[in-house]
Length: 201
Image 1 (cartoon, rainbow, N blue to C red):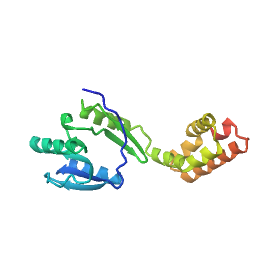
Image 2: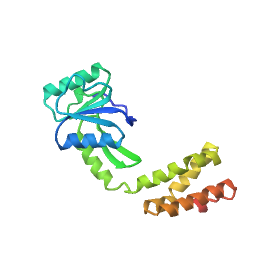
Image 3: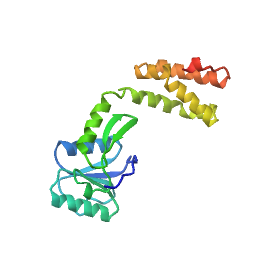
Image 4: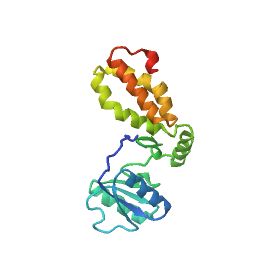
């Protein structure tokens, strides 16, 4: 089985189609909506269902419909995934750990979805629940830090110390305001040339 190239798609405002019914189809549609996609759902494939689509997912459909969806999508150059049938897919769905805006994806290249789900369960138990809050805080300051610390090496060192220190610990503990204040102080210190490793560690 060939290796797959991992990417993250921007589906905001894009039309996507989910073909199938049941809880799994609903979960796939919900995940697409969380990514900002406009999702249409159908239990069949009509002639105009693929018009304007960026992506199609078929979930728990019979083989004839699965083949029809795959063929129609790939003929039009539309990304398509058919659950449990990697030979009909132009992309595969990884198992996801959602810590928005952080997304962790686990894939076995279609070899064992069950193993990917098991790995997701294992990692989900150890990845901090508030990791997304830390990422959001870093994103909030990203432009300011780049402006105030133009040197790439120095900027990376600044972030490394912050993400290993009290700013990270405060954010992961749910104390976002305190973490933001600590980050403000650290940035102010470094731009005034009075930063020490202890102040930002």
